Length: 263
Ligand code: B12
Image 1 (cartoon, rainbow, N blue to C red):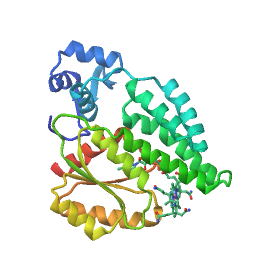
Image 2 (cartoon, helix red, strand yellow):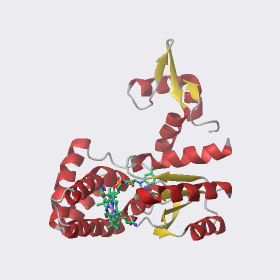
Image 3 (tube, helix red, strand yellow):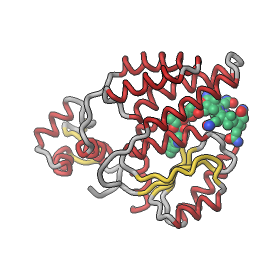
């Protein structure tokens, strides 16, 4: 499937690209499986959405996971477990959701990030001790270590994930690493606080296809942008991102960034 990510396709062309009959594509639009816009009586589909559907078709089938209400309830229980420092309970909640078919990326996004943000906010507002926040972050680090996915099949390419020098927020970079590994990327996770020169050298020496710089400390955002520019100059497509954009979109973002280089 080639062509710019933001191109708009007619439904019949989208069906061809997906290798399905027009009627099937039409049914998928009606049921919401393939997002489309009706323009002058004809459906239009973005290539980005076609690729998303194609990826889901290729992905190994999983049992259908718990719905948003259950995830919300479990996020509430996760919050209680993390505030109490109850690691066994936190691990139990996470393991059960994964057994029920939740992807680790979805678990991160829907069940771990909301309580972590709440805990962070409560610390900021002086309602929770810094020790409680640190303990919660440490529990999540270990929990993610336990659940780290290791999918089979051909790798999509090699990625590097890190934060730049001066950004000590390692947890978001661990999460980005997991999101990519779950999408079958081979990931070099260099962790937090990476000196710029070393980071650039590593990516060129290790034939990295895409670099992801996780940015949480706003004091170093200019440095992160400069490192991204240097990496792009040496031919490594690079994304810089942090709080705000969900990791469930990271694989799509990576593809768009790589496509930008091709075009
Ligand atoms: C834990 C923490 C720390 C720990 C980090 C420990 C660790 N191992 O990571 C320590 C103590 C080191 C720390 C230090 C500091 N911190 Co701090 N920290 C936090 C805290 C409480 C939680 C951060 C966290 O892990 N959140 C949970 C994560 C998982 O959620 P998230 O950030 O949304 O993460 C998502 C994205 O990052 C995304 N993502 C990750 N990579 C990528 C890449 C791409 C391309 C994309 C699209 C997405 C993406 O994935 C994650 C999941 O969706 C936050 C408070 C908060 N409300 O978040 C402050 C916070 C981030 N820290 C802050 C600050 C200012 C600091 C300090 C400068 C000083 C201070 N006030 O303590 C120092 C800086 C140290 C340094 N040099 O980096 C600020 C940032 C302010 C801002 N953004 O404007 C915050 C928001 C608190 C605040 N308001 O004061 N901190």
